Image (tube, rainbow, N blue to C red):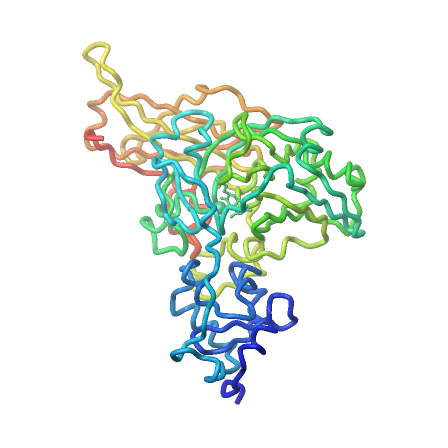
Length: 466
Ligand code: MTE
Ligand code: MO
């Protein structure tokens, strides 16, 4: 029985991150995690603890402190630490550096869902401008914010034949034409809490409607950099089907080759956000912006691009960001569903306020956003103030046209109603894009356990106090 084996700490420590069979200790038990790494939600991050105790890490990454995780670990039990190496019955552990201590300060107006890693959304009342100011742009971090010195930052482009080319930030700024794209980034979990309320509990951060924002991004086209690195963008090799991106803190994701090299796809390596250096939380100094695709593919702090036959092998490509049917509540067969790339039609109400009264007729102004993936233009926003029985059309031409070949930006909309019609009103919004795609009326038919791509009609009861 393997679990009865006893190991000296010196032996455990030889099974470190560079070993072929990494081990960790939890309490005084020893686990061989070799077979867990591929399926571990945080990917290789767990290797930081290899060769020693996982406890100080899990004290920081506290999402691990639940039975479900302990049960998985138990499958990899191989034995115990030799009692002669214990002090007061415990494995002596070194203090580890908390990778989050370097995280930046955040704007106190953000609504925080978790702080290590930082996940915070914009209050929707602040999403009232076409461009979302960077300081209130939602933050969705899976890990810590890597501390990067711009002068030392390198981007490596790895081609399918193994050739690599390296770029500094100065190369990317000076040797390539800089493109300015206005693009909306939306987390696949935006409005997840609405799905939970409207149907059943979902797993994941319970975002309201503020995990979305629109910004101006500037930098070279990915296509141009790939061409410079020697990739044949005009006639790409059949073996290459995906462009994988790796972030400095180990996050990874990929987009299909067709998007990466599309001269009209506007994928850029952004060096700027809203005309300034990108803030640390949003990818300083370099992030991919793949407009029209779910924001999870716009990899922040990008250090490596790999042109590959395969999608990124990361958890965030192969697991989390997928949808299954409403009935699929057991362990899904992850390989059966494609990774989310382009996103469906979305719309939401962001605020309702009484107009300053010019005369006796008082109006309520209802505002919100509407957005569709794939650069598909929003052609209509329908608003109802009687819970969907009758409809009117919102005004959508209130903002400048976005930069970029397709419609990568949300449309903000406005709908004005006499206040007397708003007594007890339930306001509903739904939008239509240029492919005449719409939004589902209810959450249940699109329920998926992970609560991804919540996009049913947004309903809000009018509250005159607000
Ligand atoms: N890139 C890295 N390197 N690490 C991350 O955790 N999160 C992704 C994406 N890119 C992430 C990343 C997800 S899921 C989203 S929704 C967006 O970044 C969030 O971008 P933002 O924090 O700038 O709003
Ligand atoms: Mo996300």
